[in-house]
Image 1 (cartoon, one colour):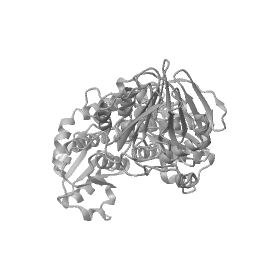
Image 2 (cartoon, helix red, strand yellow):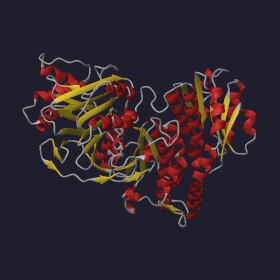
Image 3 (cartoon, one colour):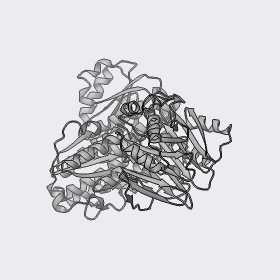
Length: 607
């Protein structure tokens, strides 16, 4: 959840660390801090608030040194205060560390350390620093290894010591860490974005590994002190992709990225002539694919709403019973899976703690376990036995947009791949693929209406409550539209299937409670239209997402946003985009921090 950056080399560390923190701010922005080692003295500066607060503070100090660590926090243990901000010192002020994760047995550790240790924060991290220091006998790596053998929980951490000015120690268990390899320098971070400016060569730490890093070499060990051989990999994103490129916010840029990255997601993964898809990363034989009698899609948040769309695709195209499970619940209810179950873990970051734990549980029970992720080299990508990257490029706004549509694209292709093997004809596959190839152009038609949608957002921005309604495959669209609005504008919103509105929620409707309905031309159009008539009779303000040419939508509603016609299965790929733009403009008009909404972080790496 938090963001970690470390540097050792020949450059001045502070500018590298501050720039790295800015790239990681989407992981947490309650507070931030930096520690730089200069001639056996550690300079630490911390500040509450966003990285700008810390950047202003360090301008007032002379902080020199070519080795340092920094952290941006999303609070778990302890409130948002400077004392709770990282980095944290040990007892004697020589050892300092940054940490992402949760030390579950920190109270037990604190009790064992005894009264000789005084703590200045409420965090589990400071107790970890004291624990490592208590094991220090001159070898810092061994102290970290010994201390971690007593820890229960998750961690990604980087440790620095005043007596070891030429090395950093880093370790990982359940919280991602990437090491960037430069010429006579190394970068350590929670993900690759802070190092894109400097290097594309990276090493991914695995769970249970500890690395000792100097400016000239990196050695990796397991907790048994055995040497581990690591491979250097090349990341495919570049620095330019991670910038706003003239947009006011990352979220707006990422909304407008969707036509391009959608093409990236499907390119080379289908055969139009055969009406078939082939995603080689599935790593299943034809016999294994035929043996699958159930699919489970595991995800959280936006990814779970994409999975709900995927459920329709797998069942309609492949005829395979499909369930969507919230990852945080899956592992705790003794799920029934076996060797004929195919489980997909869906996650933009590939580091979502709940999804990782759920996949591990499914794997233990013998299921086929595959991943659908965006970040190359992420934990889900490495721990599953196959799957696909969605190729959305870096998504730095906390609220997911382009990853959502690309996740749906990949699930459509998987559903087609299984469907052609089991039940659908080449002609049906061709119709789907032709419609899928038209999606980017139709996305652009919606994006061209951004100014119109902005004007509509102005009319709705001051309402305190909103309902989103959809039916069939557009119910997940309603859920996603509601989530976008609430997470970036802080307006209370809920989503319901259209037919459920009259089973209770309709009691809330009034002239002060608007409804946003998805009423595009599909098999449930007439049913949804009847639900909208029920809303209209209660005089609630009404905004509709409707298919181009549907003049009747104007008669029913106060406002209409039109989207191009497409196959019913593909409607969520288009219908979601105006809701993203609407939520974005409402949030901007309300003065919200669109890219960094309060209390949220991009990658939820703690349970």
